[in-house]
Length: 424
Image (cartoon, rainbow, N blue to C red):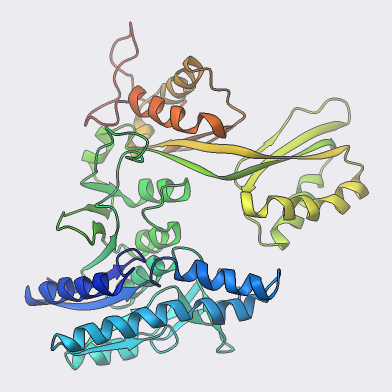
């Protein structure tokens, strides 16, 4: 099939036995006539072990040194996999992020890729050698090691596929594709044969853990076909590709949830121009991502502002704003950590009305209160109490009949769903 980039996640290479099985799969794929570049993660649990070691030394590890430490996990895996291939009579060469020319920005522990040269990979392929590449890592312009954040090996694989003009990027993991919902919560969840880049990006950013969101951004920007497959069977998996008319037939293609959320509320904020800019400017300086934002209608000269951040950044966000709040005369800062963002995603939402109303009615029917709402052309997200997470996911999956292929079923007592340009 030409050139294929294969990426194997931590569970796929979690033991020596599994590394040997990955080597066997690589050999089988190559025997079918494809050239291969292989990207691997650290062995399952290894990155967490290294992080724990760092925190045994100091509660606040230096981020540059953290990158130096946690990048070693992938180096172990590439060497072991290359050895396994050598043992089977196949020429392979292990290569780090630095060696293959992945240049990133200077943000340690969450760097972004700026350029990929891949010259050593091209040379290895020309020699008939299989390059085995350490995912998750690169170097900045100072030649310091950087890492790409959780799930960064997916991004490495897609970036290499783009740089090498590969025909396909296979992401091997412990699931056999992208499902309409978490099968652990919704037993009737259906595996999708394909999904658009845009819908997959929304699902990844909304909590679906099968693919890293930044890898999907890369794939969408450079039109890299990505296939999500299981390393434990030969299922064809799910193809992530450009949108086609058939995809629009499914109004909702998936239900996602994210428990890694916290809500920060500033009570009694002066209702005047420039205040929101100061608040979110201070958050941005700390590299804290903000998701859903709500500002209430002002009462007199005051208003309330609520927003969500990753749970791990919530307390730091509150600390950052404490001094600023005092200067502006904000009455209080409230923090709520037991929340979940539950979302429905589907490119068909662009051409069907009534989607939001149905979502809200479904949640209300189960007594689930909605705290915050966020929408785009192809997704609707609601922030709810975490204790209702599983109930909300099952309810929405049933309400939109996501397990079945087809259009949004008409509401009870209604005719066919009329068409419009956006969800309402």
